[in-house]
Image (tube, rainbow, N blue to C red; front, side, top):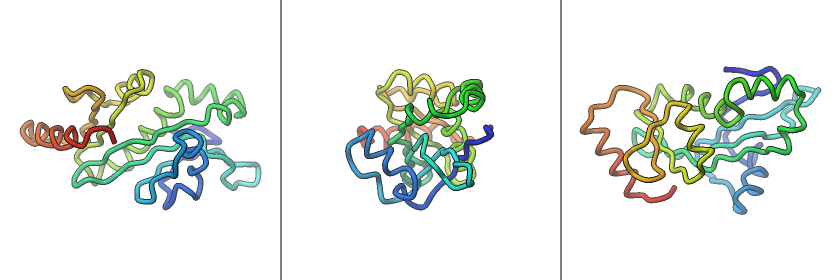
Amino acid sequence: MSVTGIEIAEIASADTLGGTLFRRRFGQEPPTFPHHVVAYARDGGGTPAVALCYVHFTPMGSVLLGGGACVDHRALRRLAPDVRNALHAQGGLYRTTLEWAVAHFAHDHDAIFGYCGDRLAERIDLAAGFVRSGHPHLLVRWLREVEIARQQELIATVHALGAF
């Protein structure tokens, strides 16, 4: 999934591009450890102009914990209508970014977990292939075949963390 004018990448540090968006959304500094995924628009000169979406993924053994997702809706409104329409056709910027991240991390992890208390974000997560774990707010996207007993073990371990 790609949209002309929008790029998605894992970056070394949120301060490189997504830090301002994260601070504005959550009122705190972004995580200083991997993994930072940012969707951004380029300016006419080809340099990154503005972070549109940021999601953080924390490694924990064979899984990732996804969180800190935020979208800059003001910046989205400034995009060309054809770009906004293309993003909408793909399910929106957050879903496009999330699906990019799933494909990007799928080779190295068994699952990505998300702790989601926002109904709209949950709807998008489910549309992107996440499923309910059996615990309130805890979603999981299995990235490969994992035996049921191991799935239950991973779900219990992540659930014990509480909100992340």
